[in-house]
Image (cartoon, rainbow, N blue to C red; front, side):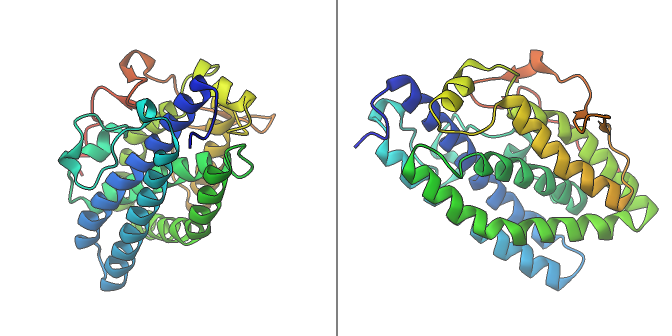
Length: 257
């Protein structure tokens, strides 16, 4: 049975679900690769465990798509080649064995997905609400792991510099992922009670967590807290934004370090 009798709400909610699910699916695959390059066995094992959890989260969300009308139901991904169109950030489509890039990507992407799921805690779509709460139960450990690896990399000047470069390169796309302020589809979902925050509110919630981590570790990022508690960030590359697939048209280049 459809989760909503309003086609426009069903279409928008389906887009949110598949965007989170596709990013989690690809993140799981990349974590499995990045974990091979971890500096310690403990980090590698934990990274592999998180990859399995992220894959499980994707499956939980894909199962929700069965509740949407067929015309708003993309096929779940079981392999990367299953669907030509993937609703995920561009840099997750590229394979990389760089541990530094992996931690930068995981830190930003996982926080972004968690921010959106937090906005689903009281969703008017009961099955989305239940799945969001289930997934959020795992995210505390994921964030703790990512933050710990960031602190380790920030201790050494060479890896600190490389991490700052990677975070700075990836941050614009992650900020774009929340959508332009006033995006019609997301406004509709807020009005329908599917989500509790609008585009810029989501972006600011995300930046609050990233900014706190930057302060704790001394990382220099192109964001600044303003006097009113909101965050300033660089101009975003909206001209390169693919609003359908929720990604930039070009993949951010990896750091040379």
